[in-house]
Length: 315
Image (cartoon, rainbow, N blue to C red):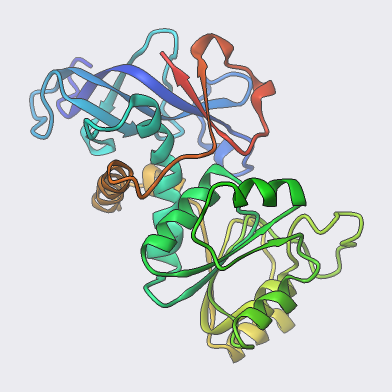
């Protein structure tokens, strides 16, 4: 920390881990991480601050998001981080819940507010929503007065979502009839915003893939006039007929890659605003991380993934 005037030293009490298997994220991940497991968020107590740090003091309880290119040694339990990645943790939140909400909350705010521009009265189709991100995005959209439709890949995950008492219009199982169902539910108008978790090409054999994801054509067909499609498909290719549908609907497509907010110095103010808003809504009980697994740090292993739960390590 010597010489880093804006750094804050944190004694970490909990952190979340994830898999660095995204083909784009691997370009930035610190080489010190092994086995493809990276730390996403940390929560702890400030034990030292740089000379120019003004927002924090020793003893503050904080929550921070880690850029993927910064390494955190779980065994040491100490992390030095610039103050523009850190916000105060509400005293009413446990370490585990606070760290569990942060990265998925940032992703949800980015998808719905900044990219999807959803507001009260809009309609949202959230594809493959049975994940820690999907649950928080549903809660956030419902809190804003948005009509939410969910899809899941199978009956088991659909039943799991139903047990959470989420405020949704309908949960659709599979994607073979998603277009017909959405158009029926919206009176043929379509939805204002669609957030996917990956899509399949129009020519893909859907029976072989068991309709685990929607096709590009079905997503475009579900969009309302002036709708917004927020995609996590990093290699999405739109054919001329797809672009024509977008053009005729005056619609747009955006790519969701929230790590860009953390890696870029251009949006530090936006990132801090989102982090503070996530903590505020978590403290108010609006964001509740149903899909959370709390483990001791000794159980870190690549075999924990893939999982729909957010893995939280207790240090």
